[in-house]
Amino acid sequence: MNRPKDSFLILDFGSQYTQLIARRIRELCVYSEIHPYHYDLSEIKAWTPKGIILSGGPASVLSDKAYKIDPQIFELGIPILGICYGMQLTCQMLGGEVEKADKREFGKAQIEVLDDSDLFQGLGSATRGSTTQGSPTQGLTVWMSHGDRIKKLPKNFIPIARSSNSPIAACKNKDASIFALQFHPEVIHTPRGKDILSNFIFKICKASPSWTMKSFIEHSAEKIKKQVGKNHVILGLSGGVDSSVTAFLLHKAIGTQLTLIFINNGLLRLNEEQKVIGLFQNQKHMNLKYVDASQKFLTELKGITDPEQKRKIIGRVFIEVFEEEAKKIPNAKFLAQGTLYPDVIESVSFDGGPSVTIKSHHNVGGLPPHMNLELIEPLRELFKDEVRLLGKELGMEEEFIYRQPFPGPGLAVRILGEITPERLDLLRKADSVVINEIKKAGWYRKVWQSFAVLLPIKTVGVMGDERTYENVVALRAVKSEDGMTADWVELPYDLLAQISSRIINEVSGVNRVVYDISSKPPSTIEWE
Ligand code: XMP
Image (cartoon, rainbow, N blue to C red; front, top):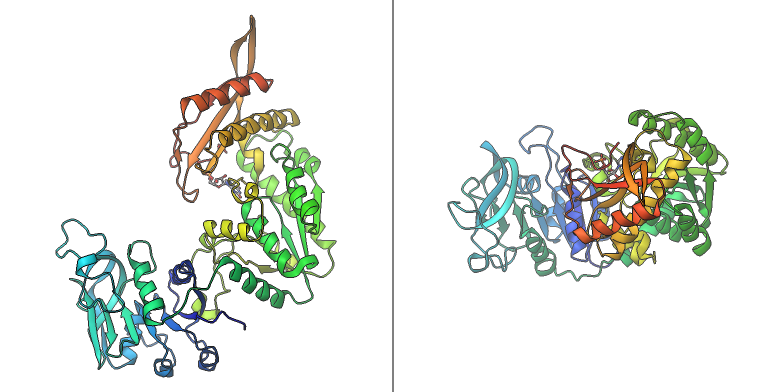
């Protein structure tokens, strides 16, 4: 494989943080690959990575079934950094001793740096990172998660950091070519962890930073081409950031071997279908199959008011329509999905390689197994902010890159009560006012989501001299990191006033606007 000159090998022992190691390295503009711990020695020799990192893992090196690496890896002359399990394994395999700690150490800890000449350069006593009040020694804050600890170091090894619980919190050999850490530098709870990895990569391994989104595109494209061969890939396009970036990346890799299926479920926002068609078909000439199934969805949803029933119907009809369309595409062997790293719950890649997942997040709602489509998930090592950078690099318009999340069931979960064409029309207009005003005021990118909800009640109002009896629209704006928890946003009063006044004046059938001031939990972001 054609790798960048300075690349790193991460040998995976099954830690849930292994992919974070890769992410941190990538943030330093350096390329890395994750492989199972039993990755072939001959492959490593042929590759000669600049450095090798041994990940953590849930097992104990004291167990009979402990995962080991080929001992010759320590003799290749390639610098090695062992993390947690990787540390214990390094020490054990090189002649040291590991023992079960009296108690499992989990969470934040303080370490004292004993040697700041290489791995901890810039992090010694004079330049320490954040400290915890009341800790016995003022040290570097790190994240520990281990049950075993080093009892005796191998010959020629010295400790370079200690903590009250781990007398050997970090160590190195005297040649300064093998290093090991009891804690996890890759997690954000180790605030200076990135500096430690940076020292390993640049000072110890002498790598140069050359890995960018541009190179990510080149490498992904090569991988996708190889995987797909002469077959065809289909992708369920929603118009959201993840599926759109996936489409751009695949298009770059395999061009006309990709068909996008964009299903209009009748629950989209104002002019959304034109925008999506414009971007993918008119502007970029991608193979786009636009399926207007809105009548089918709306007929099936007629008379339904229960939120769960709505969701189930939408999910089922989506699969029916998607399957029917997919059948018409000859040679379709792959299904591409915009699964991101946070969707991949736990890495068990050490047993079968980085492509194995416990759970795949189905952006298109989970397709029936008989469709027999193989998954392609080129974004599964990326976080949302990286996906946006990727989109930018692929030439996507900002409007698509910075779109707020929109739920699969669309406006159906924002219309409380029955979904009718009239009520959809009303909500679309109200929602469009919200989005326009939020954008105009510079709040669109500052909030996680901002939208309108149509309530199933009518209230009395007065317009001119007339009594009115019309609908209520609720306004929702939340901030959130990942959608799991959220807080309502303190939007400025003049912005709220402008939105309310425009909706009541411009959207006929609405005479009242209210603002939702509930956080998640105990509420949810969507109303249904
Ligand atoms: P809730 O309402 O559960 O929403 O607090 C959390 C986040 O998920 C989005 N959401 C969905 N996204 N399919 C999706 O793709 C769905 O069925 C769905 N339901 C909610 C919601 O917009 C918010 O960002």
